[in-house]
Length: 512
Image (tube, rainbow, N blue to C red; front, top):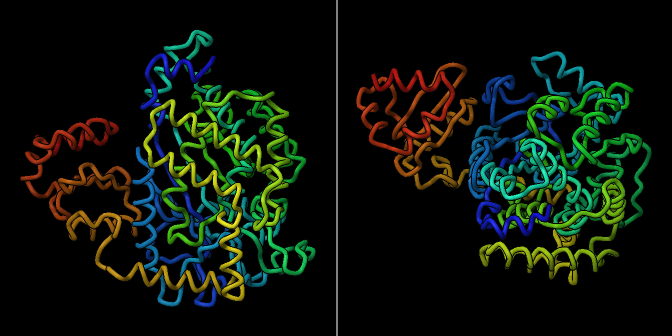
């Protein structure tokens, strides 16, 4: 199937650019000097057994902030901003969020507390990670970028082709193509967006491999980062091969569980890989990204937009041969990750060629001039590596006499910024203060929240089986006037009826 031809013949250019986005961000809680705390996860955030927004990753000190899915990447970053502000204002006065991926000021391993979760299996899994990788490697943090192509686009693309008979098989192969191409060209994102050029020597188990004064582009993406043993081989040639090889890695003892597979692309849509064979791949999780320390929330909006269209390019481009292309991509990733960030990459010509193809795609799909300008800026960075994120970070580290000092200074600055308007959520300051206060409490305590109509100040809050519709931050089902307000608002009514049965029953009760 020629995807470019089908998109153009069926006028799917705009649908192709739509989708759903979700961001997960890992970060360490630190003291003012940038050293990692050994305190427990703050109790003010409630139980991690249900919290949709604030979790811990490997250690008690390692926050994991999770946005709900959104139709616009801008809204995902607004949510990330709000969750960040809630966390920063809720932490003890002497605790901060470290803005860099590689940990600094690591305590002795026996003082690093594994996340104290309620499920014993979750604790046992983390203890296995300690035995296999050591604690320090698990303390590395980053950004996970979740993306789903617009389902209507996939449906119409399927209808416009004649190669596949099964819609599920078509969808699976489309996502697998994106995954394979991403793994082939992932080194481009490392060149442009990597930000882990160094780390304290005590991070390494057997002595630092870095020479005196040496910087690299991405320790996190190198063999010393958050990666599996090279013997773990999982195939992306087909969904059947993916499931078979991943299950073999677990059954043979290479991995203790499927979630220990640390690929830079995960196929998502089911708890276990085998379930994907029936349910189909629903979205992809891209796990490549270092934290951007120059952004308060770890990722810049322009970079998030660039990643979106880079993923679309992976669907747009033709493929090389399957397995060999993925292997070649991994080899190039390892090489680029270990390059001097102040120097041009040895693969400059290929990087420029791919981004030129991205510009050609943008013209074909009638993309906005804004994203074209973003791609042109990234293209220019191949000729001028000093403008890449890793190079800028190296210069900042040198100017601040060290990695930890820079991280500590930025951590303090970002917490101060979060308190500049302590009564508001800056990303939602167009809403009434009463609504913002309710949103703050819901995020902090872990109530699932949906903004039904931002302009009309309508939210839904859910905890377990209990659901409430709230208007203006204070009007709920206990106020009889909310029923006609729901009926008058077509947006809220439509979204309400799309919810599960328990929600529909609640709406009936409200409107009765």
